[in-house]
Length: 284
Image (cartoon, rainbow, N blue to C red):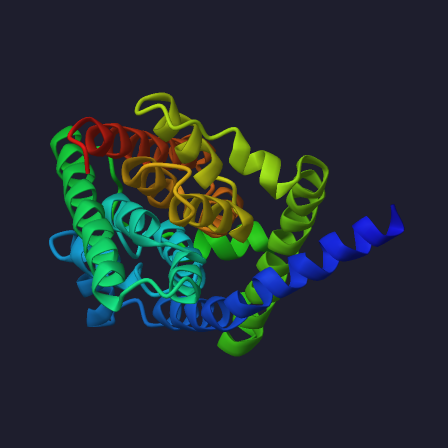
């Protein structure tokens, strides 16, 4: 039992240590903007027109730190809901290194990344369009309210406040990941993969749900099973589209409107399911 606890904790640190630079840069920028309320960059970041494009492209970087960064930016209302969803959908976590280890051609990998990016951009624009029609998204910055929620004493300096946010969120993510690792240790990655059926309808429904697990094991299982011929391309895409790494954990932690956060995660899941089923039905 002690070995399992140690293994889960070590993996929780290893899985998340790579997001530390992203978190620190994110909070330094947010603190700077909070102290420069008249800065023209604020107005640029708040514009929704190009946000999903930028998000869909940045998300394909093989690093879930980008999704954590997007969650913080959205919580501070520096980007739109469509933009953070675009980042989430295009994020692939461990897919790229696994495909490279299987000697998959660079051309095929690029096609998959482009496909995910295009889907992410389309869904992002669609979400922003619907929200604008409903006039439900508030555009004012909420960085200050985030600082109050975290009790970071922002008046004591940008760097100190950014470090406070970074350490606080990192610890939270590590704790959540630790418990997820314990659960996965109990279930077993092989058994987790085994419940994904090759059914064109059931497969994407289950794979997209597994993709929501904020742990690299989800993308590892999904990608490996596809490369081993145990699931269809559509089912794999369902799981990889919904997989945003630790981005969903960070969003639930820093965004004060939990119902809103759950709505974004719901859109993420539904997008993966629908795209996966569609790809299966048309035979891709």
